[in-house]
Image 1 (cartoon, rainbow, N blue to C red):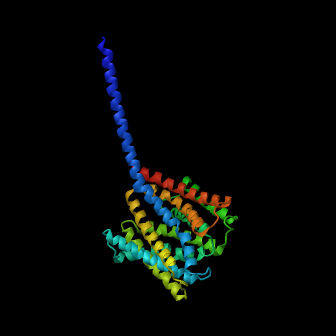
Image 2: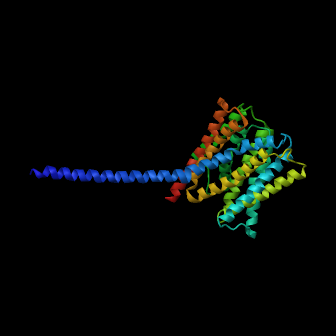
Image 3: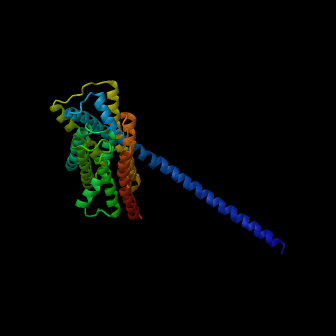
Amino acid sequence: MSNKPSLLAGAWERCYTGSMIIFWEQGNKMSEQKGALLRQLYMPAVLCTALWGSAAPCIKKGYELFEIAADASFSQLLFAGWRFALAGVLVLVAAKLKGHRILPVRSEWKPILWISLFQSMLQYVCYYIGLSATTGTKGSVLSGTQTFFALIFAHLFLQNDKLNRQKALGCICGFAGVLVLGLGGLNGFNLAGDGLVLLSAASAGAGALVSRIFTPGRDPMLLTGWQLLLGGLLLGGIGAAGGGWLGAVTLPGVLLLGYMIVLSAAAFTIWTALLGKFPVGKVTVFGFLIPVFGAVFSALVLGENIFTLRNLAALMLVSGGIAVANYVREAKSGTEQA
């Protein structure tokens, strides 16, 4: 009888020790999984959004360094042409190094031209000209509305991707941010600048729809490399034909242009790799950071004042709308995979 308590105590101790070992192993496994997600998803996704967010202030800084006037539209298009043509070449080089085929077959030229029409040609004609007449912060916030245009176009033209309440809420938040800008935030709303940037966002949204139609079953790196190259050549050709020129070619200007070329190629390559490894919603939800980084870099690079009530309200509404819309996609994606 006297041995029973000691036996029970020993059994309890072994049980407790075993369960603590299990909990410790599970805790280690969860920590390793979180560490892997941090390295493989969170950090690369945030890097991509930071690169894309820096684009608007870099374009405006480029106008300053290359001495391109606000009304010199053809020079602005020439500047854009150099960036995107060389970015396209860089994407194709990266694709080749990764073992991808880089020469399109006959059936791929139609998708390349359609995607290039919306995502490179129309979008950036409007964006580069419009950005010269607005601030970098407004350009970043307004450009973020392309997510909402993409959702609306998908609802109108795709049978299997209709708006639901949460997507609609995201769109309402996003366009409420535009309305805040129009009511006086960031020096008001003007059609020559803000209107063209908003039109470029609509073109990007249409481009996302066209890309969804044509990309399945095809190599996205090949399509993007060629659509950037062709779009850049057309933009540069229009700029040169219209008498555009880069007023001053200096080392800082060349370095900035080089950075913009690399950011386009690197961000796309990393983003494509993330989409191939993780569910779409887990990646695209990070898109809400692009306007945030755009505003921060505009303050740092251009010295713009973003810390006003209307500026911050517009930024929060657009970024919040992007997060809400993509959270829905993440949930949907997870359901489909389950």
